[in-house]
Length: 489
Image (cartoon, rainbow, N blue to C red; front, side, top):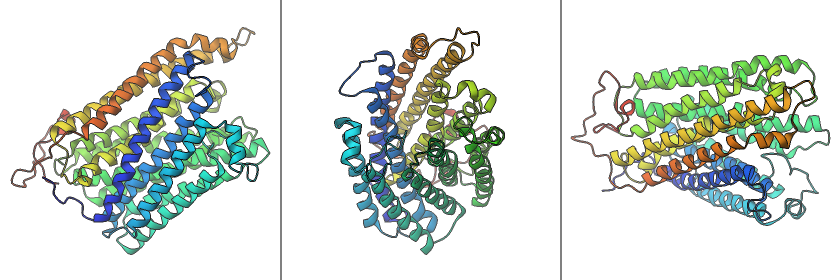
């Protein structure tokens, strides 16, 4: 039986954003496995999908689907936080189709037109913005992203302005506006390579280790308020402290990308010191999530969302914090810069911090968007298993890349007596680790499809006499791996 579960009808616009995000997420992983195979089978799919094209599609899909996820999450949570309907559902739906079509045409362009020809056809001679990692989008696509994000921000900002202002909605707004403003540096492409790399890092670093962390904190706080029943004032205080540390360490932590690109030597000290502090906000998120779950006042029926939230905090700390710290000090980074250790950190950080927080929001919101209080216990069991399978797959990939990075540094960069191996000879020695990475990628894809399958398992979480399950000592259903059988929404 379908019942009304949305507090505000305009929240329903989030559904299309979430569906698009998950479809593009699957495409990203498929191209990622293709890249892994091309590391060991060099001419796989050549000349139809050469390595540089597959990599470009893989990384661009990551950015696009996360942006879809962030927008969907904002459209779902802002009306509730503001206690008012969305400013314009028509604008939200229009921007969805504009963004989807523009993103799809861009991917098709990557796959069907040589990149140099694509640059010529899309006006790169007029304003040169293409050719940089993660920012390979043609000029019309970049302009389209700006237009879509400005329309989205206008919609969200007007909603917040006409309704209640909360710490969560304000932190989210600051993060989203910061995301949009930092992207404007993608239009700046100076001929001086040092300035070029500096501005490039203004986009890439100040996204993932700056503005995106604000979005992450706001989304995580929202879900924990909804699923634990802990007082908003307590969660707000945690959020303020986490965001303060994230901005303090993240902004000056940009210096760890300035070590060896031609900037002054003082960045070796600034980058090392503040990068060493960057794990702190992620550690605080881990403590925050566990603390809120332990202090919960009720067993929420959607225990799968609680697992995703706690998993996000833990894996974010491991990926962005621990694996980032492993090679962030300048004396260490001198040897590890651009090695497979960088890839290990990047994969685990994106998965732990941003992939999992988007899935957390989808896991919490999608049942209500489909007219359910929560998914059935069987569907939630599938979700929980998918979390563990995806996390194990990611762990295998990251450990393989870590091993490859250590061996790469040892063979290629550490010897000082003239016996260092060349790049390609070193890559041959890493083949075993690359095969293991492929295995991890396939396991991850299986977990992803298990998660998708959970949406097609029928039934809903039925309340008995509308009575909440009291919290027992020793932890609730999430900690035991089973959804709670009775709860109030």
